Image (cartoon, one colour):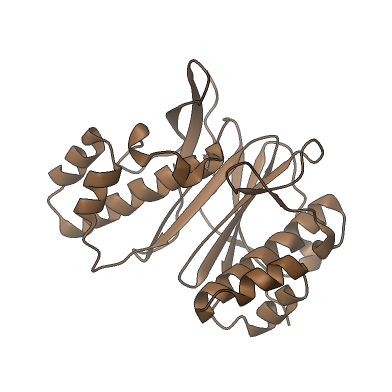
Length: 257
């Protein structure tokens, strides 16, 4: 039996960029970056982007979307640069078959994924595993049951409808959604993988196995999905790995300036 992934309970502050921890095998690092008041960080991250990434950020019409992309990609480049011992701007980020950002293969065994919502960015880093992370800010006015009926399995929708407390039902929807997104991103197909083609837990779970059918192959692949402790009821988030036995460390990105 594959051992479960273990997650720390608190987000640890990292004081400076010089104090970035190493990335050992069988450790998943989840970095939390707050965008509020991050003007210095934004300017620094702009200097780490490639010309193509500058063009992508310029095409984003909304200031928050542009800020999410610039800081998310810039901080990712800083973290990958530290792991690969290279300048952040020189980290060779490419796109996979379905558009998922990745490092060239063959080559580095480092995997990563980024999610952002509202004023928060999450960055996942690990070695020798495929990872996906998702984050959603809770929208108190979203009519979520039609979304669930269109995107979830019949069992998931039924379990969601059985919840009688409106706040619990809304949170359960977002928990389910972020787990599905995290698994789909770890799989690499993202939204090309139908959400209704696999099932995740409605209730909170640590390292729950999720089986995904593989294209052009017989059998399925198992991913291990874990809900993230983000504090309060403002966000829901999840991370998925295609293996167990990892120790998940929650880290806060250090401030600049």
